[in-house]
Amino acid sequence: MKKSLILFALILGVWSINAQELTRQDTLRGSITPERAWWDLNHYDLNVKIEPSKKFISGYNVVRYKVLEEAKTLQIDLQEPMKIESIEQDGKKLKFTSEGNAHFIKLKKKQVLGEFNEVKITYSGQPREAVRAPWDGGFSWKQDKNGNPFVATSCQGLGASVWWPNKDHMYDEVDSMRISVTVPKELMDVSNGQLESVEEIDEFKTYNWVVKNPINNYGVNVNIGNYVHFDEVFEGEKGPLKLDYYVLPENLEKAKKQFVQAPMMLQAFEHWFGPYPFYEDGFKLVEVPYLGMEHQSSVTYGNKFENGYLGRDLSGTGWGLQFDFIIIHEAGHEWFANNITYKDIADMWIHEGFTAYSENLYLDYHFGTKASEAYVVGTRSNIQNDSPIIGTYGVNKSGSGDMYYKGANMLHTLRQLVEDDDKWRQILRGLNKDFYHKTVTTKEIEGYLSKHTGKDLSAFFNQYLRTTMIPNLEYKLEGDEIKFRYTDVVQDFDMPVRVFIDGSEKWLFPNSEWKTEKLDGTQVVFDKNFYIETKKI
Image 1 (cartoon, rainbow, N blue to C red):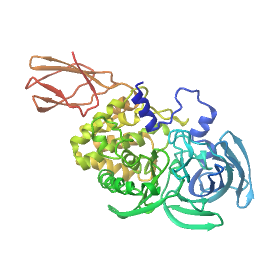
Image 2: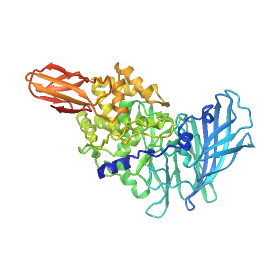
Image 3: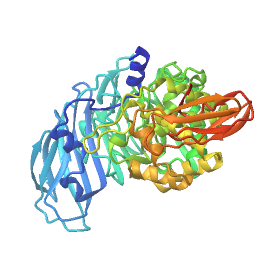
Image 4: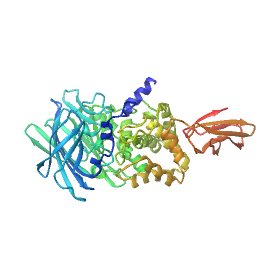
């Protein structure tokens, strides 16, 4: 693998199990076990004290849930080396057994269908430290240039249970959440949602944050630093939206210049995807000591206040230097990841394919369609076609890192097939409306796109999501005729493709059998916006 592509895989952070043997722990982490299935998350009340000098955290989480069926055992996840100290329900201590990172609580109270109950899990420990956040996950215990603690969490793929006890599977999002974080009083915590209050007790301050919308568990974050704050209001589709920015003091002026891209992002994405999904919780950009992540309503930022990805253009076209990669990409996840969330990480392409695609839609909105086309086509140089985009279900295993820009180019190709940008925009907005605050599967997204494009896209998705083959269009020019066919395609793959004959547009309808058509011209140019390979024979 080329050095640049190794870097690309690292910076985008694909969390996968690779070829290692799957274990019982993978199943307990990645499947909807019987001990998870019978109860539905309603509310978390997370209270945690963070002591940077000791790299130690302690606290509790109150888990409120609705009973879907009678049961006696409830699974809660918390990863080693964190330890559960006690578990209570209605003030009574409960026993539990542990199997690695999964903990099975023996309930005393009868679980009555339709009732809401709570369990309180008290815990503490020194959580796993992230070596190279965000792609390996855990706590980042850093210092700013003045020696102040600069601390943040990141845990996609690894799981939120790396630092707090929860139902650590993506299929069930909590409906709302309260996050109370206690830190040394000279520091500030920034988490998700709106800041409700700050309490000072002795040498500590507690920051109480309230999240009113459903939130996926890896989207919950803690960011601690010597922050300064500025804000503005974006007049969006659903009214005024408060934008809050938290950065280190020495970066304040740079942030004021760079973060002008936040409202520009909102303009573009509300146009393409519909209203920002979390008006009640606001939108924040928060400086952190790592690259950044899509934490819901609390997007973290570490791109050094410059355009591109750390100054690099991932497309090689120059257009990637017209925007700050982290602001645009990670905020794009508010629609695809935080609003529409995968049920199983095997379908992570729903997050990353659509969000990588959002980069070129941002360019489309602000710089025009030609710029956006050049950018997305340019990102093909990053595609490896090493393994399928979809991973293995039920074991917390994502697919290939190609989910980013192969996913983006698949969607860009689909836009060409729709042949109507207004319709395509309504489809993207419809996704965010019809799957608003929901967890989804690939099959649901495939079905939605087939229905609303009016096309049977079964073979299309099988080709791009489930194989590593790129459709190869072979063709021969013989006199005033063109002969053509697809190779390296799945059964029934018959995607039409646009060509230009002496500059005039024409559509060809290839499949795996040779076809022949008359040409009104001699110069044949295939439209680069279709993600295929062509071979003249």
